[in-house]
Image (cartoon, rainbow, N blue to C red):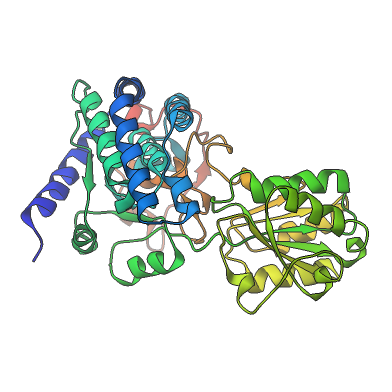
Length: 442
């Protein structure tokens, strides 16, 4: 039976989502600025909580990749505050006119963007993700239920308490956010389809699948980040080497770091030894196929390695004979997250862009650019590999729904039916005018 505390908190959140949803852009900007200032004010408490979480994680011998995600240091504090400031400066996504059409004289149809409502966010051990999520939800007018990993519990509690403390003096208040702490809370949350409008799970593919299979609430999820980089036969090798190193080593625990490097066979003898040397200098463990083993020292690839999301300084290398073979490998083993090509051949890039079915497809740059902050979204709630509603880094637009407004002057459907039916005009109008909710005229 659902505990009254969780049920009551989420139902109260549903009520408060209406307050946030109809707030002005200025009120939401003010709230974001209050939160940013409050994080600096409360930094000593947040820092102490995070140090305790990290220390306990190390005692329990949690993997290095998870600990890197768990650390919330002053650099990450500065990054999330910058993210909040950038989100605050973005164009107001609420009430944006998406399309406007004159159905007949004096009969205007508009589609406008509106908040989704209540979003349940279940995420991994990255406390900085919590702040990013809250910032995007406030700007988009959505109330938020948060459930972080248990290994970050103290940090998450400190962050949410800081956010709520900063919110209390705002026009919106602090009832738009709640933090769940136990796995049993998640189970109960999955049953609240009448009060929660969208779930966004961030974690392993198995976890995302579990959420999808155990709720009737719509889910915006992603699978593993098994990302690839293909070095084409027409690649500029001076570009290729730093891209390879960045895509693997800049932050290997991220879901947009590459797990497999695909290299055209014509480059195996000349370029592969250079790649191997650079990767080893960066402390990357290389697992190679037979042709890679013939050129550099590495661990032989075994069955299943291509499906591993290492999230660490480990990398598969496979030598392929063609662009076609590289694309087929990505289709077979990839997770439709982020894949990139390095090439000076415009036709090869065009084919890669068209044929690779991933949320992010890049040319001549690192896969690490797959990020809401780097895309100019201010932040992201995650990277979606689904094709419905939102795909790729999910920023403000991915947190919006829409509704249709129709304003008339006494029209009835009978006028447009039967033998002497009047014809509709169906004339598209400019969207660069005040909307109907802003007092725009028909």
